[in-house]
Length: 399
Image 1 (cartoon, one colour):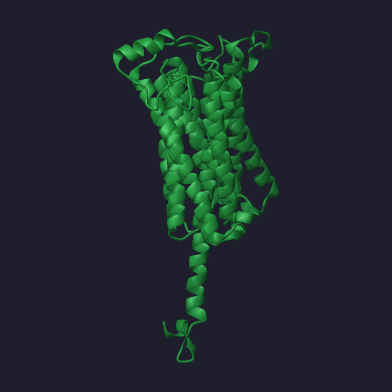
Image 2: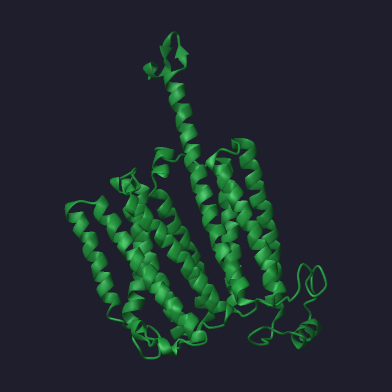
């Protein structure tokens, strides 16, 4: 890879950006846990003020959480922009360098216009930029971090606009996409931080075809992402306590969901913020969420056991898989505690944060396992070419 990987300051900056992004997810969790998503009804302003000039004296109640979310999101956007520009400047020369810098500056200036049509246009261009960057990564043998930085830059713009549109259009469905993209963005920043380490650079020269173990890691990670999307759907439908008991559901392994049962559930339903009526669909959604959680525990446990059995405990993949297992178990406990505590905001937020860490850890263990598989394949191929004799000569001499 390029010389950017030798920069300790870049590694620290990428790691710091990942931490701030995790903090943003935590604040976002507080927003949904406190039902404060519409505490500030306008965007990009805050009650008519420029959000950076909104008086601290007015930071009260739900406004505190929603306005803080916007400020931390702005910080993540700034850090991502700096990181993308840093990577681009370090890894390009002459004309290409200036084209990238001008493009980044132009986008920042357009964001400063603070007009909804401009925001929507930039959000529409973001998937195009992401697709082009992925194409460039696929075409290049040296998958320079500059393209990963551009993907992050485009993603943070799309994420910010989705958050604003959720307020302007008052659509919970947009909030679900916003939450899902937040998880993927955190994974992306974590991977950039991983790729920026000397440890990654020295792990292997290039990845090969994924091993069966890495495929299992990937499938389990995708399962976690689906689970997080289900969780976001429940939160934005205000159905976090559609089932108020655990491990049973209304005292049964599978609750009744006929009209009479739903009517009885709603009559006894009590939440911290409000008593919102629930539907059979919301109960089904939470039951699927519980079953999927069990499947994830089994899947991650299998990954940890298999990696230890195949690679030994000293292998980096085994260590990451063990950490992954610990996070998933902690996530399960927090999920149960969310119900037992009647959806206490701090517990529910912790559940969201650990979920993000589970997804990011799964993505990293998948990536590292693929990298190490490539290293082993390359080592075997080199050994076969150079050390296996054929009539007294190395095999490679006969090609």
